[in-house]
Image 1 (spheres, rainbow over the protein chains, first blue to last red):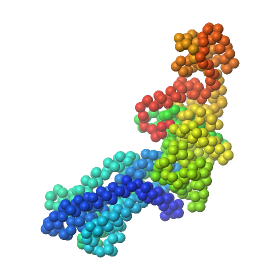
Image 2: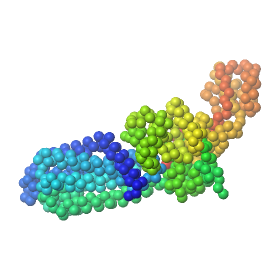
Image 3: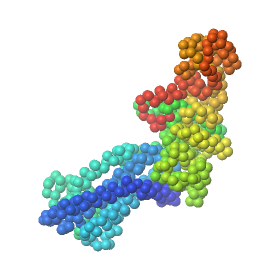
Image 4: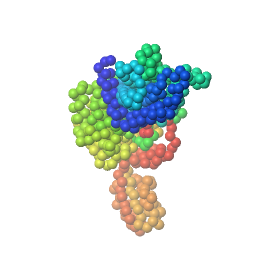
Length: 259
Length: 336
Protein backbone atom coordinates (compact mmCIF):
# COMPACT_ATOMS: atom_id res chain seq x y z
CA UNK A 1 0.00 0.00 0.00
CA UNK A 2 1.55 3.33 -0.99
CA UNK A 3 1.77 6.29 1.37
CA UNK A 4 -1.14 8.26 -0.08
CA UNK A 5 -3.44 5.26 -0.04
CA UNK A 6 -2.45 4.45 3.55
CA UNK A 7 -3.27 8.00 4.64
CA UNK A 8 -6.60 7.90 2.83
CA UNK A 9 -7.55 4.58 4.44
CA UNK A 10 -6.48 5.72 7.91
CA UNK A 11 -8.34 9.05 7.68
CA UNK A 12 -11.53 7.47 6.37
CA UNK A 13 -11.22 4.70 8.95
CA UNK A 14 -10.86 7.35 11.64
CA UNK A 15 -14.00 9.05 10.41
CA UNK A 16 -15.89 5.78 10.28
CA UNK A 17 -14.87 4.84 13.82
CA UNK A 18 -15.73 8.31 15.15
CA UNK A 19 -19.12 8.13 13.45
CA UNK A 20 -19.80 4.72 14.96
CA UNK A 21 -18.75 5.76 18.45
CA UNK A 22 -20.78 8.97 18.24
CA UNK A 23 -23.97 7.16 17.32
CA UNK A 24 -25.20 5.26 20.38
CA UNK A 25 -28.25 4.38 18.29
CA UNK A 26 -25.95 2.17 16.20
CA UNK A 27 -24.13 0.52 19.06
CA UNK A 28 -26.84 0.00 21.66
CA UNK A 29 -29.35 -2.03 19.58
CA UNK A 30 -26.50 -4.11 18.17
CA UNK A 31 -25.53 -5.00 21.74
CA UNK A 32 -28.85 -5.18 23.52
CA UNK A 33 -31.08 -6.94 20.99
CA UNK A 34 -28.88 -10.05 20.51
CA UNK A 35 -28.26 -10.31 24.27
CA UNK A 36 -31.99 -10.07 24.94
CA UNK A 37 -32.67 -12.90 22.46
CA UNK A 38 -29.82 -14.87 24.02
CA UNK A 39 -31.46 -14.57 27.45
CA UNK A 40 -34.89 -15.55 26.11
CA UNK A 41 -33.61 -18.54 24.13
CA UNK A 42 -31.24 -19.79 26.81
CA UNK A 43 -33.93 -19.80 29.48
CA UNK A 44 -36.82 -20.99 27.31
CA UNK A 45 -35.19 -23.76 25.29
CA UNK A 46 -32.98 -25.46 27.87
CA UNK A 47 -35.07 -28.63 27.53
CA UNK A 48 -33.83 -28.98 23.96
CA UNK A 49 -30.59 -30.31 25.45
CA UNK A 50 -32.53 -33.47 26.45
CA UNK A 51 -32.88 -34.43 22.79
CA UNK A 52 -30.75 -37.46 22.00
CA UNK A 53 -27.59 -36.37 20.25
CA UNK A 54 -27.67 -32.75 21.47
CA UNK A 55 -24.00 -31.83 21.74
CA UNK A 56 -24.06 -30.13 25.16
CA UNK A 57 -26.16 -30.02 28.29
CA UNK A 58 -26.04 -26.20 28.34
CA UNK A 59 -28.38 -24.55 25.85
CA UNK A 60 -26.80 -21.22 26.77
CA UNK A 61 -23.45 -22.49 25.47
CA UNK A 62 -25.11 -23.78 22.30
CA UNK A 63 -27.04 -20.60 21.58
CA UNK A 64 -24.22 -18.23 22.50
CA UNK A 65 -23.03 -18.49 18.91
CA UNK A 66 -26.18 -16.74 17.68
CA UNK A 67 -25.56 -13.19 18.99
CA UNK A 68 -22.30 -13.04 17.04
CA UNK A 69 -24.26 -13.53 13.83
CA UNK A 70 -27.11 -11.24 14.87
CA UNK A 71 -24.60 -8.55 15.75
CA UNK A 72 -22.94 -8.96 12.37
CA UNK A 73 -26.31 -8.44 10.72
CA UNK A 74 -26.52 -5.04 12.37
CA UNK A 75 -23.27 -4.28 10.61
CA UNK A 76 -25.02 -4.63 7.22
CA UNK A 77 -27.43 -1.95 8.28
CA UNK A 78 -24.92 0.36 9.95
CA UNK A 79 -22.24 0.39 7.27
CA UNK A 80 -24.80 0.60 4.49
CA UNK A 81 -26.86 3.32 6.11
CA UNK A 82 -23.78 5.45 6.76
CA UNK A 83 -22.68 5.23 3.14
CA UNK A 84 -26.20 5.77 1.82
CA UNK A 85 -26.38 8.94 3.91
CA UNK A 86 -23.10 10.11 2.35
CA UNK A 87 -24.62 9.57 -1.08
CA UNK A 88 -27.86 11.33 -0.20
CA UNK A 89 -26.18 14.35 1.38
CA UNK A 90 -23.59 14.76 -1.38
CA UNK A 91 -20.68 13.93 0.95
CA UNK A 92 -19.62 11.24 -1.50
CA UNK A 93 -19.31 13.93 -4.18
CA UNK A 94 -17.07 15.90 -1.85
CA UNK A 95 -14.86 12.84 -1.44
CA UNK A 96 -14.98 12.21 -5.18
CA UNK A 97 -13.45 15.62 -5.80
CA UNK A 98 -10.32 14.61 -3.92
CA UNK A 99 -7.72 12.17 -5.29
CA UNK A 100 -9.50 9.48 -3.27
CA UNK A 101 -8.94 5.85 -4.24
CA UNK A 102 -12.12 3.75 -4.29
CA UNK A 103 -10.48 0.97 -2.28
CA UNK A 104 -9.60 3.50 0.42
CA UNK A 105 -13.22 4.58 0.67
CA UNK A 106 -14.52 1.03 1.08
CA UNK A 107 -11.77 -0.03 3.48
CA UNK A 108 -12.16 3.11 5.53
CA UNK A 109 -15.90 2.66 5.82
CA UNK A 110 -15.47 -0.94 6.94
CA UNK A 111 -13.27 0.22 9.81
CA UNK A 112 -16.45 1.26 11.62
CA UNK A 113 -17.78 -2.28 11.23
CA UNK A 114 -14.45 -3.60 12.50
CA UNK A 115 -14.64 -1.57 15.71
CA UNK A 116 -18.30 -2.38 16.21
CA UNK A 117 -17.45 -6.06 15.64
CA UNK A 118 -14.84 -6.05 18.40
CA UNK A 119 -17.08 -4.25 20.88
CA UNK A 120 -20.00 -6.56 20.13
CA UNK A 121 -17.99 -9.78 20.28
CA UNK A 122 -16.37 -8.81 23.57
CA UNK A 123 -19.76 -7.96 25.06
CA UNK A 124 -21.50 -11.15 23.89
CA UNK A 125 -18.67 -13.39 25.03
CA UNK A 126 -18.33 -11.67 28.40
CA UNK A 127 -22.04 -11.79 29.13
CA UNK A 128 -22.29 -15.40 27.93
CA UNK A 129 -19.38 -16.61 30.05
CA UNK A 130 -20.56 -14.66 33.09
CA UNK A 131 -24.01 -16.24 32.69
CA UNK A 132 -22.45 -19.70 32.81
CA UNK A 133 -21.68 -20.67 29.23
CA UNK A 134 -18.76 -23.03 28.70
CA UNK A 135 -15.71 -22.40 26.57
CA UNK A 136 -14.38 -25.85 25.80
CA UNK A 137 -11.33 -24.59 23.94
CA UNK A 138 -10.25 -22.54 26.95
CA UNK A 139 -9.19 -18.89 27.28
CA UNK A 140 -6.83 -19.18 24.29
CA UNK A 141 -9.95 -19.38 22.11
CA UNK A 142 -11.08 -15.89 23.11
CA UNK A 143 -8.96 -14.02 20.52
CA UNK A 144 -10.04 -16.55 17.89
CA UNK A 145 -13.70 -15.96 18.70
CA UNK A 146 -13.13 -12.20 18.51
CA UNK A 147 -11.33 -12.57 15.18
CA UNK A 148 -14.06 -14.78 13.75
CA UNK A 149 -16.75 -12.38 14.93
CA UNK A 150 -14.96 -9.37 13.46
CA UNK A 151 -14.38 -11.20 10.16
CA UNK A 152 -18.08 -12.00 9.87
CA UNK A 153 -19.08 -8.45 10.86
CA UNK A 154 -16.80 -6.91 8.26
CA UNK A 155 -17.91 -9.46 5.64
CA UNK A 156 -21.55 -8.59 6.23
CA UNK A 157 -20.56 -4.92 6.22
CA UNK A 158 -19.42 -5.25 2.61
CA UNK A 159 -22.94 -6.34 1.69
CA UNK A 160 -24.26 -3.19 3.34
CA UNK A 161 -21.81 -1.08 1.33
CA UNK A 162 -22.86 -2.79 -1.88
CA UNK A 163 -26.55 -2.20 -1.14
CA UNK A 164 -25.89 1.47 -0.36
CA UNK A 165 -23.89 2.03 -3.54
CA UNK A 166 -26.34 0.08 -5.68
CA UNK A 167 -29.53 1.70 -4.38
CA UNK A 168 -28.23 4.96 -2.93
CA UNK A 169 -30.81 5.06 -0.18
CA UNK A 170 -30.75 4.31 3.53
CA UNK A 171 -34.28 2.90 3.37
CA UNK A 172 -33.22 0.31 0.79
CA UNK A 173 -30.33 -0.76 3.00
CA UNK A 174 -32.58 -1.09 6.03
CA UNK A 175 -34.96 -3.16 3.90
CA UNK A 176 -32.24 -5.84 3.73
CA UNK A 177 -32.28 -6.35 7.47
CA UNK A 178 -35.40 -8.56 7.68
CA UNK A 179 -34.18 -10.59 4.69
CA UNK A 180 -30.97 -11.42 6.52
CA UNK A 181 -32.89 -12.32 9.64
CA UNK A 182 -34.88 -14.84 7.63
CA UNK A 183 -31.55 -16.39 6.62
CA UNK A 184 -30.61 -16.60 10.28
CA UNK A 185 -33.84 -18.32 11.25
CA UNK A 186 -33.47 -20.79 8.35
CA UNK A 187 -30.17 -22.02 9.75
CA UNK A 188 -29.00 -24.26 12.60
CA UNK A 189 -29.62 -21.34 14.93
CA UNK A 190 -31.87 -23.21 17.37
CA UNK A 191 -30.84 -26.85 16.87
CA UNK A 192 -27.82 -28.67 15.47
CA UNK A 193 -28.13 -29.59 11.79
CA UNK A 194 -28.42 -33.32 12.42
CA UNK A 195 -31.36 -32.78 14.76
CA UNK A 196 -33.36 -30.84 12.18
CA UNK A 197 -35.61 -33.68 11.12
CA UNK A 198 -37.97 -31.78 8.84
CA UNK A 199 -36.55 -32.51 5.40
CA UNK A 200 -37.07 -29.13 3.72
CA UNK A 201 -35.82 -27.23 6.74
CA UNK A 202 -32.77 -29.47 7.03
CA UNK A 203 -32.01 -29.02 3.34
CA UNK A 204 -32.22 -25.23 3.56
CA UNK A 205 -30.22 -25.04 6.78
CA UNK A 206 -27.55 -27.35 5.35
CA UNK A 207 -27.19 -25.09 2.32
CA UNK A 208 -27.24 -21.92 4.42
CA UNK A 209 -23.71 -20.53 5.02
CA UNK A 210 -24.88 -19.09 8.34
CA UNK A 211 -25.16 -22.65 9.73
CA UNK A 212 -21.42 -23.08 9.17
CA UNK A 213 -20.57 -19.72 10.70
CA UNK A 214 -22.51 -20.80 13.78
CA UNK A 215 -20.74 -24.17 13.73
CA UNK A 216 -17.36 -22.45 13.83
CA UNK A 217 -18.25 -20.63 17.05
CA UNK A 218 -19.82 -23.77 18.52
CA UNK A 219 -16.75 -25.84 17.81
CA UNK A 220 -14.76 -23.63 20.18
CA UNK A 221 -17.55 -23.27 22.74
CA UNK A 222 -18.67 -26.89 22.87
CA UNK A 223 -16.06 -29.20 21.37
CA UNK A 224 -12.66 -27.57 21.89
CA UNK A 225 -10.07 -27.05 19.16
CA UNK A 226 -11.47 -28.49 15.91
CA UNK A 227 -9.72 -27.14 12.89
CA UNK A 228 -12.33 -28.17 10.27
CA UNK A 229 -15.33 -26.08 11.39
CA UNK A 230 -13.04 -23.16 12.21
CA UNK A 231 -11.46 -23.10 8.79
CA UNK A 232 -14.86 -23.43 7.18
CA UNK A 233 -16.19 -20.52 9.26
CA UNK A 234 -13.26 -18.23 8.47
CA UNK A 235 -13.37 -19.40 4.83
CA UNK A 236 -17.06 -18.53 4.45
CA UNK A 237 -16.47 -15.14 6.06
CA UNK A 238 -13.58 -14.51 3.66
CA UNK A 239 -15.68 -15.60 0.69
CA UNK A 240 -18.57 -13.31 1.67
CA UNK A 241 -16.06 -10.48 2.15
CA UNK A 242 -14.47 -11.11 -1.25
CA UNK A 243 -17.80 -11.27 -3.07
CA UNK A 244 -19.13 -8.27 -1.13
CA UNK A 245 -16.02 -6.18 -1.83
CA UNK A 246 -16.10 -7.08 -5.52
CA UNK A 247 -19.78 -6.17 -5.77
CA UNK A 248 -19.26 -2.96 -3.76
CA UNK A 249 -16.25 -1.96 -5.89
CA UNK A 250 -18.23 -2.47 -9.08
CA UNK A 251 -21.15 -0.50 -7.68
CA UNK A 252 -18.76 2.26 -6.57
CA UNK A 253 -17.43 2.59 -10.11
CA UNK A 254 -20.97 3.07 -11.36
CA UNK A 255 -21.86 5.45 -8.56
CA UNK A 256 -18.69 7.53 -8.87
CA UNK A 257 -18.95 8.51 -12.49
CA UNK A 258 -16.20 11.10 -12.19
CA UNK A 259 -14.17 11.31 -15.39
CA UNK B 1 -4.16 27.61 -30.54
CA UNK B 2 -3.79 28.08 -26.80
CA UNK B 3 -6.26 30.54 -25.40
CA UNK B 4 -5.88 32.80 -22.43
CA UNK B 5 -8.22 30.62 -20.40
CA UNK B 6 -6.15 27.53 -21.14
CA UNK B 7 -2.81 29.12 -20.31
CA UNK B 8 -4.03 30.44 -17.01
CA UNK B 9 -6.50 29.24 -14.45
CA UNK B 10 -9.56 29.84 -16.57
CA UNK B 11 -12.49 27.89 -17.94
CA UNK B 12 -13.34 27.32 -21.58
CA UNK B 13 -16.54 25.61 -22.68
CA UNK B 14 -17.69 24.83 -26.20
CA UNK B 15 -21.05 23.41 -27.26
CA UNK B 16 -21.43 21.55 -23.97
CA UNK B 17 -24.47 19.27 -23.83
CA UNK B 18 -25.90 17.00 -21.19
CA UNK B 19 -28.91 14.85 -21.92
CA UNK B 20 -30.67 12.63 -19.41
CA UNK B 21 -32.53 9.48 -20.33
CA UNK B 22 -36.19 10.23 -21.13
CA UNK B 23 -35.67 13.83 -20.15
CA UNK B 24 -35.02 17.15 -21.82
CA UNK B 25 -31.51 18.44 -22.51
CA UNK B 26 -30.50 19.78 -19.13
CA UNK B 27 -27.64 21.66 -20.79
CA UNK B 28 -28.12 22.43 -24.44
CA UNK B 29 -24.95 23.45 -26.22
CA UNK B 30 -23.51 26.20 -24.07
CA UNK B 31 -20.32 28.16 -24.82
CA UNK B 32 -18.54 30.26 -22.28
CA UNK B 33 -15.10 31.46 -21.28
CA UNK B 34 -13.95 32.60 -17.87
CA UNK B 35 -10.59 34.31 -17.40
CA UNK B 36 -8.27 33.77 -14.46
CA UNK B 37 -9.24 35.77 -11.39
CA UNK B 38 -12.66 36.52 -12.80
CA UNK B 39 -15.89 35.94 -10.90
CA UNK B 40 -18.37 34.52 -13.35
CA UNK B 41 -21.98 34.52 -12.21
CA UNK B 42 -24.13 31.81 -13.73
CA UNK B 43 -27.65 33.05 -13.20
CA UNK B 44 -30.88 31.21 -13.80
CA UNK B 45 -33.96 29.74 -12.13
CA UNK B 46 -34.15 26.24 -10.62
CA UNK B 47 -33.89 23.59 -13.30
CA UNK B 48 -32.23 25.92 -15.81
CA UNK B 49 -29.09 23.74 -16.05
CA UNK B 50 -26.74 25.56 -13.68
CA UNK B 51 -25.92 22.67 -11.37
CA UNK B 52 -25.66 20.18 -14.22
CA UNK B 53 -23.10 22.48 -15.83
CA UNK B 54 -21.13 22.67 -12.59
CA UNK B 55 -21.19 18.88 -12.21
CA UNK B 56 -19.75 18.52 -15.72
CA UNK B 57 -17.08 21.17 -15.17
CA UNK B 58 -16.06 19.55 -11.89
CA UNK B 59 -15.79 16.12 -13.61
CA UNK B 60 -18.61 14.58 -11.57
CA UNK B 61 -20.85 14.12 -14.61
CA UNK B 62 -19.64 13.26 -18.11
CA UNK B 63 -20.96 15.54 -20.84
CA UNK B 64 -23.07 14.03 -23.61
CA UNK B 65 -21.33 16.24 -26.18
CA UNK B 66 -19.07 19.25 -26.46
CA UNK B 67 -15.80 20.09 -24.77
CA UNK B 68 -14.78 21.85 -21.60
CA UNK B 69 -11.32 22.75 -20.34
CA UNK B 70 -10.83 23.80 -16.75
CA UNK B 71 -7.48 25.24 -15.79
CA UNK B 72 -6.23 24.11 -19.18
CA UNK B 73 -7.29 20.48 -18.67
CA UNK B 74 -10.00 18.60 -20.52
CA UNK B 75 -12.78 17.57 -18.12
CA UNK B 76 -13.30 14.23 -19.83
CA UNK B 77 -9.75 13.08 -20.60
CA UNK B 78 -7.91 14.74 -17.73
CA UNK B 79 -10.34 14.40 -14.83
CA UNK B 80 -7.76 13.89 -12.05
CA UNK B 81 -5.79 16.97 -13.19
CA UNK B 82 -8.96 19.04 -13.27
CA UNK B 83 -9.83 17.91 -9.76
CA UNK B 84 -6.40 18.85 -8.46
CA UNK B 85 -6.89 22.35 -9.89
CA UNK B 86 -10.37 23.07 -8.61
CA UNK B 87 -12.21 23.46 -5.36
CA UNK B 88 -15.96 23.09 -5.20
CA UNK B 89 -18.76 23.82 -2.79
CA UNK B 90 -21.72 22.09 -4.34
CA UNK B 91 -25.39 22.69 -3.63
CA UNK B 92 -26.41 22.03 -0.02
CA UNK B 93 -23.25 22.00 2.07
CA UNK B 94 -22.30 18.32 2.09
CA UNK B 95 -20.96 17.91 5.59
CA UNK B 96 -20.94 15.15 8.17
CA UNK B 97 -23.05 16.27 11.13
CA UNK B 98 -21.16 13.95 13.46
CA UNK B 99 -17.72 15.42 12.75
CA UNK B 100 -16.37 18.72 14.02
CA UNK B 101 -15.19 21.53 11.76
CA UNK B 102 -11.58 20.69 12.57
CA UNK B 103 -12.12 17.02 11.79
CA UNK B 104 -13.60 17.97 8.43
CA UNK B 105 -10.54 20.06 7.65
CA UNK B 106 -8.21 17.26 8.75
CA UNK B 107 -9.98 14.75 6.49
CA UNK B 108 -10.10 17.07 3.49
CA UNK B 109 -6.48 18.17 3.71
CA UNK B 110 -5.32 14.56 4.18
CA UNK B 111 -7.30 13.31 1.20
CA UNK B 112 -5.73 16.07 -0.88
CA UNK B 113 -2.30 14.79 0.12
CA UNK B 114 -1.08 17.64 2.33
CA UNK B 115 1.73 16.70 4.73
CA UNK B 116 0.85 16.07 8.38
CA UNK B 117 2.17 19.37 9.70
CA UNK B 118 0.61 21.35 6.89
CA UNK B 119 -2.76 19.68 7.43
CA UNK B 120 -3.07 21.16 10.91
CA UNK B 121 -1.80 24.61 9.96
CA UNK B 122 -3.86 24.85 6.77
CA UNK B 123 -6.98 23.68 8.58
CA UNK B 124 -6.45 26.23 11.34
CA UNK B 125 -5.72 29.02 8.87
CA UNK B 126 -8.86 28.34 6.83
CA UNK B 127 -11.11 28.00 9.84
CA UNK B 128 -9.85 31.36 11.07
CA UNK B 129 -10.26 32.87 7.62
CA UNK B 130 -13.93 31.92 7.41
CA UNK B 131 -14.53 32.93 11.02
CA UNK B 132 -15.11 29.45 12.42
CA UNK B 133 -12.08 29.07 14.68
CA UNK B 134 -14.31 29.51 17.73
CA UNK B 135 -16.51 26.58 16.62
CA UNK B 136 -13.76 24.34 15.27
CA UNK B 137 -14.29 21.63 17.87
CA UNK B 138 -18.07 21.64 17.74
CA UNK B 139 -19.95 19.00 15.78
CA UNK B 140 -21.19 20.37 12.48
CA UNK B 141 -24.71 19.11 13.23
CA UNK B 142 -25.03 22.09 15.56
CA UNK B 143 -23.82 24.69 13.03
CA UNK B 144 -26.17 27.24 11.51
CA UNK B 145 -26.74 27.34 7.76
CA UNK B 146 -24.27 30.20 7.36
CA UNK B 147 -21.60 28.40 9.38
CA UNK B 148 -22.03 25.27 7.28
CA UNK B 149 -21.64 27.28 4.09
CA UNK B 150 -18.49 28.94 5.42
CA UNK B 151 -17.03 25.58 6.41
CA UNK B 152 -17.96 24.27 2.96
CA UNK B 153 -16.00 27.14 1.42
CA UNK B 154 -13.01 26.48 3.69
CA UNK B 155 -13.03 22.81 2.67
CA UNK B 156 -13.13 23.75 -0.99
CA UNK B 157 -10.00 25.85 -0.45
CA UNK B 158 -8.06 23.19 1.45
CA UNK B 159 -5.60 22.39 -1.36
CA UNK B 160 -5.24 25.97 -2.64
CA UNK B 161 -7.23 25.54 -5.86
CA UNK B 162 -6.81 27.98 -8.73
CA UNK B 163 -10.45 27.69 -9.68
CA UNK B 164 -13.41 27.63 -7.34
CA UNK B 165 -16.91 26.38 -8.17
CA UNK B 166 -19.67 27.59 -5.88
CA UNK B 167 -23.09 26.18 -6.58
CA UNK B 168 -25.72 28.48 -5.07
CA UNK B 169 -23.50 29.18 -2.08
CA UNK B 170 -25.88 31.55 -0.32
CA UNK B 171 -29.22 29.86 -0.90
CA UNK B 172 -31.18 29.91 2.33
CA UNK B 173 -28.77 32.20 4.16
CA UNK B 174 -29.70 35.37 5.99
CA UNK B 175 -28.45 38.70 4.68
CA UNK B 176 -25.59 38.91 7.17
CA UNK B 177 -24.23 35.46 6.33
CA UNK B 178 -24.71 36.11 2.64
CA UNK B 179 -22.77 39.37 2.78
CA UNK B 180 -19.93 37.75 4.73
CA UNK B 181 -19.63 35.03 2.12
CA UNK B 182 -19.69 37.57 -0.72
CA UNK B 183 -16.83 39.45 0.91
CA UNK B 184 -14.76 36.31 1.21
CA UNK B 185 -15.40 35.29 -2.39
CA UNK B 186 -14.53 38.78 -3.63
CA UNK B 187 -11.32 38.67 -1.60
CA UNK B 188 -10.36 35.28 -3.03
CA UNK B 189 -10.68 36.56 -6.56
CA UNK B 190 -9.27 40.02 -5.92
CA UNK B 191 -6.31 39.19 -3.69
CA UNK B 192 -5.51 35.55 -4.46
CA UNK B 193 -6.40 35.55 -8.15
CA UNK B 194 -8.74 32.59 -7.77
CA UNK B 195 -11.17 32.14 -10.65
CA UNK B 196 -14.71 31.79 -9.32
CA UNK B 197 -17.57 30.13 -11.15
CA UNK B 198 -20.64 30.93 -9.12
CA UNK B 199 -24.17 29.76 -9.80
CA UNK B 200 -27.00 31.68 -8.27
CA UNK B 201 -30.67 32.41 -8.58
CA UNK B 202 -30.27 35.67 -6.72
CA UNK B 203 -30.06 38.69 -9.00
CA UNK B 204 -28.47 40.86 -6.37
CA UNK B 205 -25.77 38.26 -5.80
CA UNK B 206 -24.79 38.17 -9.45
CA UNK B 207 -25.01 41.94 -9.60
CA UNK B 208 -22.91 42.54 -6.50
CA UNK B 209 -20.28 39.89 -6.98
CA UNK B 210 -19.80 38.86 -10.57
CA UNK B 211 -17.46 40.53 -13.06
CA UNK B 212 -19.45 38.88 -15.80
CA UNK B 213 -22.80 37.12 -15.82
CA UNK B 214 -24.16 34.34 -17.99
CA UNK B 215 -27.91 33.94 -17.90
CA UNK B 216 -29.09 30.38 -18.50
CA UNK B 217 -32.63 29.26 -19.19
CA UNK B 218 -33.80 25.82 -20.29
CA UNK B 219 -30.18 24.73 -20.75
CA UNK B 220 -29.17 27.59 -23.05
CA UNK B 221 -27.22 30.74 -22.32
CA UNK B 222 -29.57 33.53 -23.30
CA UNK B 223 -27.35 36.48 -22.38
CA UNK B 224 -23.79 37.09 -21.30
CA UNK B 225 -21.76 40.14 -20.32
CA UNK B 226 -20.91 42.35 -17.39
CA UNK B 227 -23.94 43.29 -15.27
CA UNK B 228 -23.55 46.86 -16.52
CA UNK B 229 -23.43 45.78 -20.16
CA UNK B 230 -26.45 43.56 -19.78
CA UNK B 231 -28.48 46.27 -18.10
CA UNK B 232 -27.36 48.81 -20.66
CA UNK B 233 -28.59 46.43 -23.35
CA UNK B 234 -32.05 46.75 -21.86
CA UNK B 235 -31.32 50.41 -21.44
CA UNK B 236 -34.55 51.95 -20.35
CA UNK B 237 -35.58 52.41 -16.74
CA UNK B 238 -39.07 51.65 -15.52
CA UNK B 239 -41.40 54.06 -13.80
CA UNK B 240 -44.05 52.65 -11.52
CA UNK B 241 -46.93 54.71 -10.18
CA UNK B 242 -49.73 53.87 -7.74
CA UNK B 243 -52.91 56.03 -7.93
CA UNK B 244 -54.40 57.44 -4.74
CA UNK B 245 -57.85 56.17 -5.82
CA UNK B 246 -57.99 52.56 -7.01
CA UNK B 247 -60.59 53.56 -9.62
CA UNK B 248 -58.05 55.83 -11.31
CA UNK B 249 -55.79 52.90 -12.25
CA UNK B 250 -57.13 52.63 -15.82
CA UNK B 251 -56.72 56.37 -16.45
CA UNK B 252 -53.23 56.27 -15.02
CA UNK B 253 -52.34 53.36 -17.30
CA UNK B 254 -53.65 55.32 -20.26
CA UNK B 255 -51.49 58.36 -19.40
CA UNK B 256 -48.37 56.29 -18.76
CA UNK B 257 -48.79 54.35 -22.02
CA UNK B 258 -47.76 57.56 -23.84
CA UNK B 259 -44.26 57.13 -22.41
CA UNK B 260 -43.47 53.50 -23.18
CA UNK B 261 -44.38 49.82 -23.14
CA UNK B 262 -46.05 48.34 -20.04
CA UNK B 263 -43.82 46.57 -17.54
CA UNK B 264 -44.44 44.38 -14.49
CA UNK B 265 -45.90 46.30 -11.53
CA UNK B 266 -47.42 45.75 -8.10
CA UNK B 267 -51.15 44.81 -8.12
CA UNK B 268 -52.27 48.38 -7.35
CA UNK B 269 -49.75 50.07 -9.60
CA UNK B 270 -48.96 50.67 -13.24
CA UNK B 271 -45.48 50.54 -14.74
CA UNK B 272 -43.98 51.38 -18.12
CA UNK B 273 -40.49 51.21 -19.53
CA UNK B 274 -39.57 54.80 -20.32
CA UNK B 275 -38.71 55.08 -24.02
CA UNK B 276 -36.88 58.35 -23.41
CA UNK B 277 -35.01 57.27 -20.31
CA UNK B 278 -35.12 58.73 -16.82
CA UNK B 279 -35.25 62.31 -18.06
CA UNK B 280 -38.91 61.66 -18.90
CA UNK B 281 -39.82 61.32 -15.23
CA UNK B 282 -40.75 64.99 -14.88
CA UNK B 283 -42.94 64.77 -17.98
CA UNK B 284 -44.72 61.75 -16.51
CA UNK B 285 -45.52 63.68 -13.33
CA UNK B 286 -46.75 66.69 -15.33
CA UNK B 287 -48.92 64.50 -17.58
CA UNK B 288 -50.56 62.78 -14.61
CA UNK B 289 -51.12 66.16 -12.96
CA UNK B 290 -52.63 67.57 -16.13
CA UNK B 291 -55.10 64.67 -16.21
CA UNK B 292 -55.88 65.16 -12.48
CA UNK B 293 -54.73 61.65 -11.56
CA UNK B 294 -53.60 61.85 -7.96
CA UNK B 295 -50.46 59.86 -7.21
CA UNK B 296 -49.97 57.95 -3.99
CA UNK B 297 -46.56 56.61 -4.85
CA UNK B 298 -44.12 57.02 -7.73
CA UNK B 299 -40.86 55.17 -8.20
CA UNK B 300 -38.17 54.99 -10.84
CA UNK B 301 -36.51 51.60 -11.22
CA UNK B 302 -33.10 51.38 -12.86
CA UNK B 303 -32.84 48.35 -15.18
CA UNK B 304 -32.03 45.20 -13.22
CA UNK B 305 -30.77 41.78 -14.20
CA UNK B 306 -34.36 40.64 -13.79
CA UNK B 307 -35.28 43.06 -16.57
CA UNK B 308 -32.54 41.45 -18.64
CA UNK B 309 -33.92 38.00 -17.85
CA UNK B 310 -37.42 39.21 -18.70
CA UNK B 311 -36.26 40.73 -21.97
CA UNK B 312 -34.37 37.59 -22.99
CA UNK B 313 -36.85 34.94 -21.90
CA UNK B 314 -40.19 36.72 -21.71
CA UNK B 315 -40.48 35.79 -17.99
CA UNK B 316 -39.21 37.31 -14.80
CA UNK B 317 -36.65 35.28 -12.86
CA UNK B 318 -39.04 34.90 -9.91
CA UNK B 319 -41.85 33.77 -12.19
CA UNK B 320 -39.53 31.30 -13.86
CA UNK B 321 -38.53 29.86 -10.49
CA UNK B 322 -42.17 29.33 -9.55
CA UNK B 323 -42.88 27.79 -12.96
CA UNK B 324 -40.02 25.33 -12.51
CA UNK B 325 -41.16 24.50 -9.01
CA UNK B 326 -44.61 23.58 -10.30
CA UNK B 327 -43.31 21.54 -13.24
CA UNK B 328 -43.01 17.76 -12.76
CA UNK B 329 -39.49 16.66 -11.96
CA UNK B 330 -37.50 15.07 -14.73
CA UNK B 331 -34.40 13.00 -14.21
CA UNK B 332 -31.68 15.39 -13.21
CA UNK B 333 -28.67 15.40 -10.98
CA UNK B 334 -28.80 18.95 -9.80
CA UNK B 335 -31.64 21.27 -9.33
CA UNK B 336 -30.13 24.20 -11.08
